[in-house]
Each structure stands twice: as structure tokens, then as C-alpha cells.
Amino acid sequence: MPVITAIIPTFNDQDFVERCLCSVIDQAVDDVQIIVIDRGSSDQTRNTIHFYESQVDQVIDAPGTTLGASINRALLHAKGRYVTVLRGDCLLMPGAMETIRDHIKHHPQTHWLASTNLRIDTDDHLKGNVNPTLPEHLADYLKHNAGLIPPAGVFWRKALIDTVGLFDNDLEDAYDYDFYCRLLAANHQPMLIDRTLAAVREHVITEPMHALDTAEQYIHVARKHAMNLPLTQRYALWGNCDLRQRIITLARAEMQGEKSQNYLAWKLFTHPWWISDHHLWEALFKEHQQTQNDEQNKEAA
Image (cartoon, rainbow, N blue to C red; front, side, top):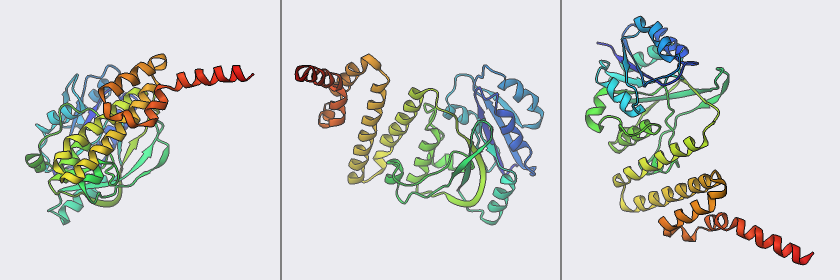
């Protein structure tokens, strides 16, 4: 039985998936199960996967699935006692699997591990590090006030899904955040390894709307887990989420162009408690105020 199952979800990663696959295949261990799951790529990703198919344990086609749903499908075939998820544009550092295997050997009660990530660009140039930190309280993690678990180089005991459940099938970007929230709510804290085990690739944001959609997914997850908090912390979290939602609303309004005022007016109508937010009012009446100022300047001239 393999010690670790590496799940690699991919979608249109033709420029990066070969480097990702090789970073896992080239690990100097023989007790790792590799499952690649393609979510319906329309570029050359599938051809690259096919080239390396003999060196992985299983390839699953899951077109049209979210990241959460695709990982769940792979988990049905996972045989390792521990699982790690590595997106198709990320990398596993040399020796990472051996480090984890040795750690598990000496700490057999380990449930959840997190490591430092390198930040790299699309050309593998180093941009910095992502260092994990432990959240003291679930409330702080839900409010993004404390605690950082990097997106790669995270390993967890597969048996945990019997306790906290599988990934949320509806989540595309916040699938891992939601899963970690459930682990924290079940009193599982990650053990931090003082090693850099993975590299996460940072892309230039070409679709700002998608970035805002991602931010809203995190707010949705935070609100969902509010029920795990005492009432006072729950109220504080609701206020935090509402503030983040207003910031996103202002950002979306900026992208609406001439329709921004109609968009903001509709948001205020559907969120009447936002009426005291002067930032929203300023944005809503910005054009009207500018027109008044222009008229006053003409009269003064």
C-alpha cells in the first residue's frame, strides 16, 4: 500500500503540466500513488498527460467538474494513507516525498502537515516565499486575520475525510480553504514543517472579475462556517464578511462603466443596511457631484 497519494488536477495547463508531472514522478520514492485528473482541457494538456501515462498510476477524465468535485472523484481511487493535492501548474520540490515519508515514520500520529511554498512566475523565476502560520482561533482564520496555509505542499491523513467529509463539490477556488476550515473546526491543527516542499505558480490577473468571484467564494465559505463559532465571534465574523462584500461591490462597480450607478443603486436596495456606508454613497453619487462641481466652477468663472 502506498504511503502517499498525490492527486494532480489539471485544466488547460499545457504550458506547465509537464513540469508538474515530472516534479512528482522524479521523486526518489517508490511508495507514492500518482492520480492525474483532467477536467476537460481543450489545449495540449491531455496529450502531455498521455505521454506520461505509463509513469502514473491512474488518469481520470472529469470534464466540466469543479476542483472540489474532481478531487473527490480521485479520492475514490486513492490508496495512500496520506494525500496531497498539487494543481497542474505547481511543482513539488526535489526530496519532498522523502521528507514527508520520513516525518510520518517518526511521527505516526501526524494528521495534517503544511510547508513553505516558493512563489514562482510563469517562467519559473523566483518571486518569494509563502510561509505557513497557524491560526490561533478558527474565527481569525475565517476573517483572514491570522493563519496562512499555502496552496501546495500540504499533506493530510486520508482517514480525516471520514471525520470532516469530502471536498465541497460546488467550490472551484475555495475548495481547500473550506476543507481546512472543517479540519480546524474539528480541532485539527496543521503541523508546520521547516522545509520548502512545493512551488506555487502566480499568474498575471487577466480576468479581474474571476478574481472577485474567487474572493466571494471565500466569503461564502466563511459565512457557512460561522455556525461553528460562539455567538459573539459569529457576529464579528458577519461584520467582517459584510465589509469584505462591500469592498468587492465597489470593485465590481468600477468595472461596470456607465452602468456603475445602476449597479450600486441595486446593491443598496438589496442590502439596505449598507446605507450608512459613505464609500458606497460617494461612489453612487460621484458623477452627480462632479456635474455639480463643474456647474459651480462655470458660474464662478
